Length: 467
Ligand code: SAM
Ligand code: SF4
Image (cartoon, rainbow, N blue to C red; front, side, top):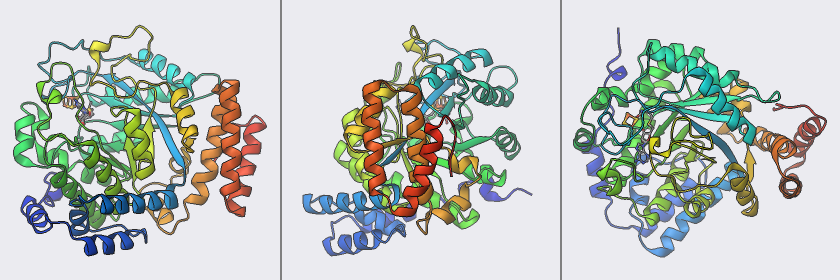
C-alpha cells in the first residue's frame, strides 16, 4: 500500500511558512547573534532561525553572518572544492516550463538526443580534460524505450575509457520516477539523484508549468520519498531562484529536508542554488518575476551553510566567476567547470542553439583549477564515499562528529595529484604541487600521514586510490 507522502507533499505547509515570515520581518540584532553563535556549533538551524537570518539587512549583521558562514565552511570543508562536469544527453521534453529553452513548444531550439556512442564520445572528451565526476542531465521525454534510454546512457558514460581513466561517479538530474524505476536507476550505480523543485509556491508553480507531467507539483515534490524507498539515499535538492520570493522558497526547502530527516533519518546530500538565466525562446527567463539580487544570493548561500552544515552546496556555471568566487568562501563546496548545456556540446563545432540556458562562466577546467589555486582552494575529484558505500545516513553519521574530514582531505589531495600528473601543464603542475605542500602543512599529523601515503601511491603510478 502506497504511503500518502509517496505521491503528495503533505509536509508543504504554505500557511506555516507565511506565518513564520510575517513574524520575523524586522531585523532583531540580539536574536541574530544568538542564532549565529548556535550555528557555529555545527548542529544546524531550525526553520524559525532561518526566517530570522533571512531578514538581516544592516551591513554589520550581514558581515557577522558571512563571518559565521566562513567559519563553518572552513571547519567542515577546509579549502577543498569538488569539481564535476554536466553531460546533457537529450533536450527532448514533453513539458512546458516557461523558463526553459527545452520546453516542448520552443521551436528555436535544435532537438537532439544523443545515442550511446555519442554519449561515450562526449564522455571521452570530458575524461581527457581530467574530470572524474559527471552530472547527467536530460529533458523529460526519452526516445525509444523510455527509462531504458536513461539507463543505457548511464552505462555508456561508465563504459568510456581514455588511457585507463574512467568516470567514477555519475550523478543524474532527471524528472521524477516511480519507485520501480528508481530501483532500476539504483541498479545502474548512480551517485546522487538530483531534482530541483523549481518553486514550492503552488500558484507560481501552476503559472510556469503549463503542460506535461511536470504540472503536478505533488508528484515532483514527493520524488525523494520514492527514491529513498527504492534505496537511493543520496538525493540532491534545488530550487530555481527567481520564480518566487527567495525567502518563502528557502523555508519550504528547509521543510522538505526536515520531512526527509523525520521519515528516513537523512535529509539531502546536496543543495543546488541556480538562479534563472536567460534562455532561448523564454521571455520569463530574461525577466525573472522575483530576481534574486547578488546581495541576497550571498546571504542565501551563507544561511544555507549554517542551516545544514553537512550538506554540500553546488554552484553551476550559470553564475559568473566573480559570484562563484565569493560564494566559495561562504559555503559552496562543489562546482561544475568547463560546462556545456547542449547535448553534444563538448564537440568543438557544437550547436549552441541547442543549449538550455546561457552560461555565466565560460572558462575551461584548467582555467577554473588555476583560479581556485590562486584563491587558496584545493580542487578535488574525490569519489571515495560513494565507492565505499558511505552514502545517505552512513555519510551523515561520519560527517556529523567531524570524522569525514580525515577522509576528504587525503582524498582531495590524491585526486588532485592525479590531475596534476596526467593533465596539467608544467606550470600548472608546479603551482599545484605548491598548493599540496601548503595543504599538508595545515593538516594534523594523522591526516597528513594518510595523505602522504596516498600521494606516494599516485606518484608511484597508481590511480584511483582513496580512503
Ligand atoms: N528535465 C528535468 C527536470 O526539469 O527536472 C531535468 C533536467 S532540467 C534541464 C534541470 C534544471 O535546469 C531544471 O530543474 C531547472 O531548475 C534548470 N533550468 C531550467 N531553465 C533554466 C534557466 N533558464 N536558467 C537556469 N536554470 C534553468
Ligand atoms: Fe523540460 Fe526540465 Fe526544461 Fe522543464 S526544466 S522544459 S522539464 S528540460
